[in-house]
Length: 183
Ligand code: IMP
Ligand code: MG
Image 1 (cartoon, rainbow, N blue to C red):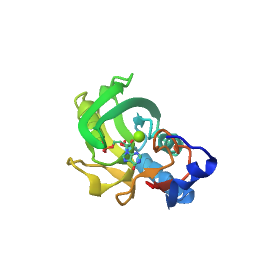
Image 2 (image 1 turned 60 degrees about the vertical axis):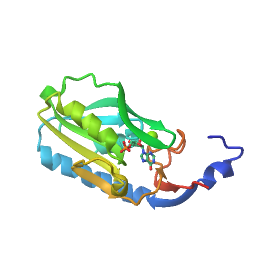
Image 3 (image 1 turned 45 degrees about the horizontal axis):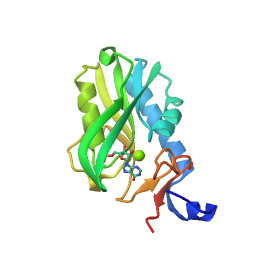
Image 4 (image 1 turned 180 degrees about the horizontal axis):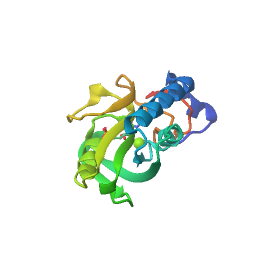
């Protein structure tokens, strides 16, 4: 993506879908839910890069149970704009997760393919427990059956940017979630 002037960059931000204040309040609530659910037991928060890095950073600071952080990189392969359904793990966790209560922290559940594959992989390693928390859920787009334990916001079928989510690697640093203008 190339921008000749700052206005070109800004004009792609169509409208704010979730404000900074709404995100803050929901992340705080999600942290409280984790604290009461695990009730002092240690957990491993696993973030799927890159989209979930800001959500993870804010969420982990609301967590008061002993908490470790792990990162994975998962890539979905596309044929044109269609997801091929092939998900490849290009960076794996360092931890042996069999000793952990694992919480996957994901940015958005769209078709559900990425999360389904990551869950299958992590479940095969026999963690003490496995849950998923997603910042956003786009249920209209789902093509695989999937149980998300907790999502902060359900949104309509728009391509969104901000708060970690990108379009062509830009816009991750917006403090809110916005609809991307396809024009
Ligand atoms: P999946 O289709 O559920 O496998 O989604 C895979 C990944 O696509 C997500 O983890 C996001 O990184 C990305 N993605 C899906 N929808 C959006 C969107 O609206 N904006 C930005 N990234 C998205
Ligand atoms: Mg992305």
